[in-house]
Image (tube, rainbow, N blue to C red; front, side, top):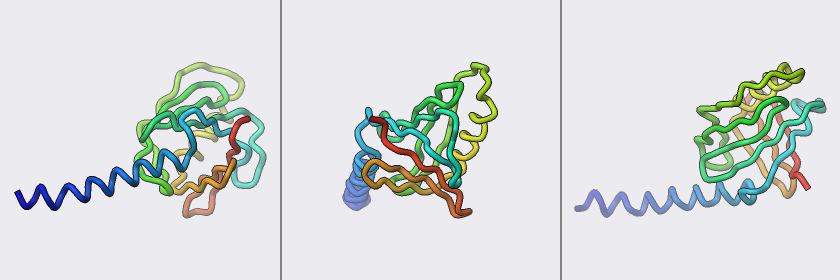
Amino acid sequence: MTRLILTLPLLGLFQCEKDETVAAYGAADRTWVLQEIDGQPYEASALLRFPEEGKIAGNAPCNSYTGTLNAPYPWFEIQDLSATRAACAGLEAEGFYFAALMAMTQSEVSGDVLILRNEDEHEMVFTAAE
């Protein structure tokens, strides 16, 4: 019985962190548009959304994708990234996008700007779609 009483407050704390994560990335219908990777403009189109707690989704240059967000804000860790398998001229840009996205470990939202970064000083800058 004592063990259960000690565990319940910790569950409440974890729920608060999850709620903050949802709020940090904006509403579930907010779409983030990739502008640059490591200070260089990203010429292709890539979109990122946070449709529900613990999930990401979006559109890369050729394919749509989904994945699991496995860390509370401001940490950023994607697991189980999967994409459709369409071929197009943008596959190289798509591979670059997915590799960069999977390497990110931290996130920061400031108004209409989302910045993903990692300890190796790589950075992805997104802006909210209008």
